[in-house]
Image 1 (cartoon, rainbow, N blue to C red):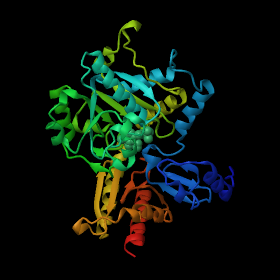
Image 2 (spheres, rainbow, N blue to C red):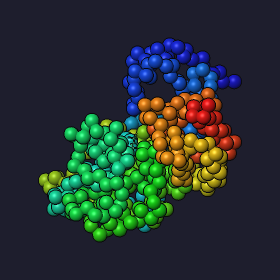
Image 3 (spheres, rainbow, N blue to C red):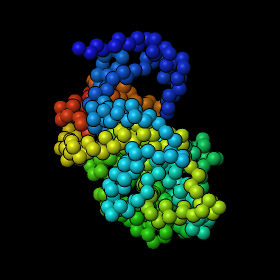
Image 4 (tube, helix red, strand yellow):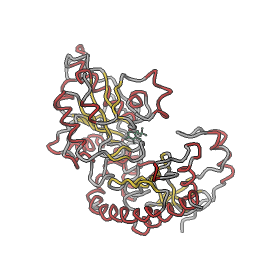
Length: 435
Ligand code: PLP
């Protein structure tokens, strides 16, 4: 019988507070409380150092697909690490990356995205897409196409280029001075009215749903219209499927739902099933070909990272793709999407719930002080954070976006666990907002 290790929570907490700096975290407050120290994961559940179990309500920051410690992915990872742990992708290549690139290309109709450029995370997949777009137009003799179009509320990552296209002021305003030249639009109509599309190298969008904006769903047909705009004006279309990719919206990729093919597409988070960091930027053959030439022509795409196409991460991604077939992941996800929809309906009876937004297996539940007059809670109250803290005591671990509670668990979650997760949110909202 395997024995659960005993964790010294106090010591770990003390050392975390002493040595660590967490992302997107107000450290002063963080250091005032004992952190949840996650020590185990299995299926849709996480366990902490005090032996408490939680449903992984946000799939460990939107990454996990098939559940934690899936034996097929663990097996593939351990076989790969025993054979080849890492090798440079500058000047050499390896079988796992070759096979993964081929598999990714075949996921798109008529192999319209025919080339795969690997990097490490969502931000770098976007960063590479932006730089590729810029250099593509230089190589094509259109250097004036040097600005990017993005949307208000967007989030594309935190590297300087990706952050330039972010439309959330709180996150990005401090770095505005060093951002790429960007034009931000609040909707498609505003973009269509922009008088200088010939200055735009590319426009980037989170298809179907904006994540960090608070799980905000785009109007139906918008993506198709955006593709038409790009066709008319020559602006490249970059789809950021970092959150939506690999089944999250109910289809393998969100763009399938509007039959749209981009010029560049970014994937990360779920690519490895949410197990290891790996990202890819897929591009059309036309873009790739612009970079072909002799060394003297300086057409090389000068971009890369030390861990580009790490073999272990590639092996995890291949195993994850296999699971989509062997476990019929997308087929099995559909009843979970319906259960989630049905269960979330219950929350509408709570008078502070102003909106429930769902796209596939992504949900955002927004609370307001007074939904009838659209009056929000003062942001300083941190109502969403308090609800999520309360939900932990009912066995659900998730994070809010302001006062929107995110619910997007791993696809393998059971019906009973979905009901439990929604119960936990209901109890937490009652406790924090209605007591
Ligand atoms: N793009 C989107 C749509 C995202 O949601 C995120 C992260 O949440 C990113 C890019 C950045 O990904 P990463 O955190 O892996 O850099």
